[in-house]
Length: 183
Image (cartoon, rainbow, N blue to C red; front, side, top):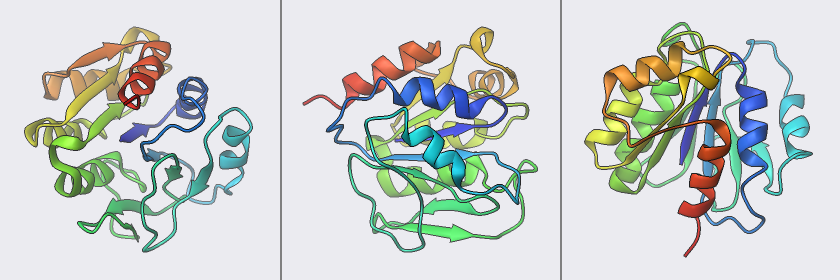
């Protein structure tokens, strides 16, 4: 599963992650827009509120279920076809690095119809193109209800770009993702 967020995203992610049970079997990859010089303390802050381990992704790391991976500040996070992680300092996309679109598009290539993409709060349209690609490959497309977002531009752009499968408030997204992880 891939999640993209920007303005207000860390609080939104904390609310969603709190609803994922210990032993959750799916990997979660996150592109959260951060300041390029942001330290990695945000992962410790979120980790205190989540039953799953949270870490900043490493180059060539194998993706494991039950783990939450964040793109490091000022790096794009990509999924390779062999289901390992890659980091890139390529140009910004939608004014952002990490870019939600870069993560979503690479994950769609690697996972195809087995992928769930979630676009959360944010102040630009990053994630809309990537969510379109996830849906085109047969994956599940989810957007935060714009009325519940701190900044509604990202979820609105996603909803305008693709026929999303679910438009939900944060607690609804958390419960949906928890249900998708059940056998």
